Length: 368
Figure 1 (cartoon, one colour):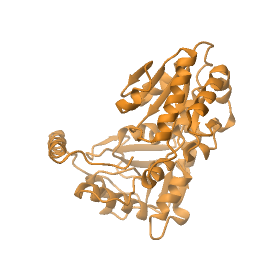
Figure 2 (spheres, one colour):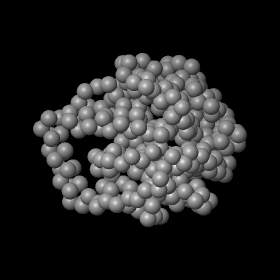
Figure 3 (cartoon, rainbow, N blue to C red):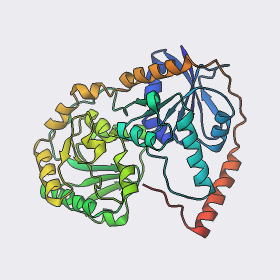
Figure 4 (tube, one colour):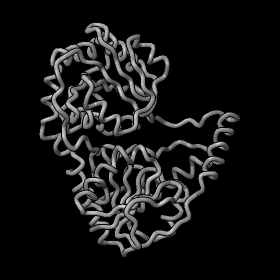
């Protein structure tokens, strides 16, 4: 049984991507996993020594310092284009340096998008070579019961605030036309600017849902998903958007939800069945959504039984992750972990300092 030490700083991203795989491996008795959060607090199945280290996304300064001080082969998982070419303040520069170090020194780099792997590799002097490993994002382990006939609602989820673009406005107009045409509403989960919300008079908005509750909502609600992504952003932002994964298709499809997806690389290049809107025009979105409404709920119910979604079960992907971990463990001598966790009061002070700096100098601009 592999003893895994998992370093993560983004709890939500970990719950959506990595934890479902680790949990299936743990339940099957194939690994013991202990988790180190950004405060260096150790939880889970602790061991005196560990066989392999798994790091995820943007590590905290303390996590990064611990890792760089040790010659430990490790697996690094990154699920967004977090490495940018832009400048920034001291904290931003330190984050970029840490991400680049992980990309350059990891024994294996995993990502849920082949395009993301290629783009990240192109930013490194020596690329990835054989170190790159495509590890898709998971859907559900098993599909819920078939959705019943009835009036569907449209559903738009966004983990980051959508970026302003004329073709996204066109898509919103077409989506709202469909909402009004069949007399329903749109459910919106995530961060949306008011100007986008105003496109939808018949809307229900939820700023945040915990990941497990989000999957429960997908399982029980009569939904048709919409996933508009702009195809006409400024070059750096378009590259960022193009490198996203098809996790929406994986989660929606395995929840018996058919959807309409922009013809952007995350969806157009997916190996999962999904209905692509050929152009981000008002007419194209309206036509596609009305077709999905006529096919509700049969298309979503049928889609979940496609063999492609079975390959996205956490247990199936967990097997791939286990192979990667075993491969890296073969290079590693068992190692121990010792650290004093950062007191909560220190994090509170840090947050207050950042808030004060933001009020004085304005919010830090990120590429999204």
